[in-house]
Image (cartoon, rainbow, N blue to C red; front, side, top):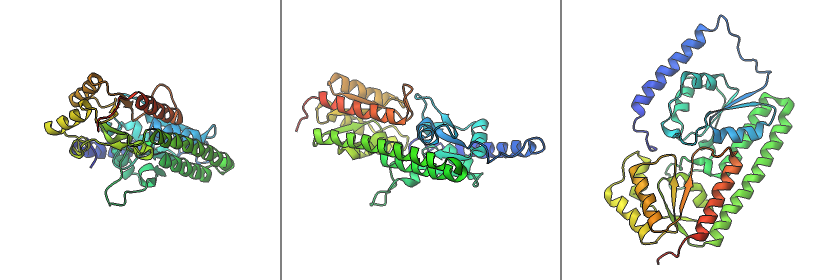
Length: 312
């Protein structure tokens, strides 16, 4: 179970209430509203602007794309869908969401509306061979982003065959650009062989994996964070020892979920002159998905270039 999902009992009750409300509103409107015209411009709804940006790259000028969560200071894990969010999801031609319990609020709405066409990004991510669940932050897996773009193109091509070639061409262009960024990630690992970091959360897992960067975050620290718990004092101390002892080259910090523990780790890194690489879970600075990923990769490259020597 992912972090901050132990509040699920309350949120499931809220989601079921929301689903009933949406169903009631829909039923009461049947006498005055008409059903969506599927021959008109397709509408894509994405749970976050990350997936909305990918959908927009594929849709071009031929489909409308709406992202529900667009604030780079919000935490997508703990968001609760409003009635208007639920209505947008159920009325969409296509819904693109992360899956893997990351945006569970969308799963809750879709559970009551199984007829909605969806692209579940998590389902397109290869699963570990050890039988463990894949890391849920699949938007940092460029291969998954590419697969999502292809799937969006095929769904839109079916719904809007007049523009099928444009959707598929846009997806192919997007995929080629993700391949270039993935190569930039691997170049970091080649330039810094054996480099290691610690992370306040395993958000950039796929970037680190593709670049060949070792994540030395203590397993019990990462597990506590994933479960939504405060790490044990011993785990925090282990993280601080790795930083102050210069046994890692950088700290990867998710700026959207600051806690007293993450602040303590950031302060320790600053004091020890260990670079802090900030990441986010939604788009920032008006960037699209590709620009956001390029900026993140560039920050990794720049910060590791200036990192002090690591103790052996």
